[in-house]
Length: 126
Image 1 (tube, rainbow, N blue to C red):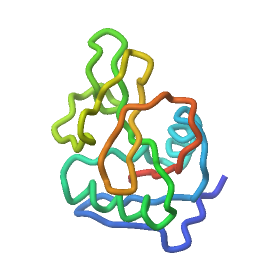
Image 2 (cartoon, rainbow, N blue to C red; image 1 turned 135 degrees about the horizontal axis):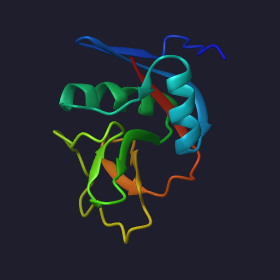
Image 3 (cartoon, rainbow, N blue to C red; image 1 turned 30 degrees about the horizontal axis):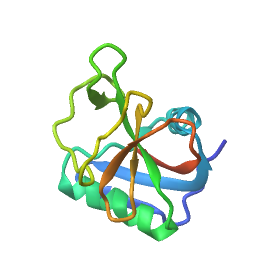
Image 4 (tube, rainbow, N blue to C red; image 1 turned 60 degrees about the horizontal axis):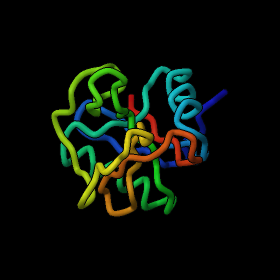
């Protein structure tokens, strides 16, 4: 499966963020990014958050971030288990009652905890 990009790329420092425009659930999004040698986009600072937001705005679709709630800790971490060093939660978020283990980005760049079975835009980072 070739990731067709059509100019939907943002470069920040050493990182590139790209979307194929597909809307899938969290597991599928993660898998499709890993298949092409990347991972699901997860902003580590404001500049990266803005780059991802630009893609979200371009498609006018919410996107999953490469962040999820740890089973044991109940804390949100990056996919690789590392603790978040940056966050941009929407006001009163995360508000989960335990069922919302994934994180979506709104079109304004803020985050919300969400169930993992929604169909959202896939944005990968490389």
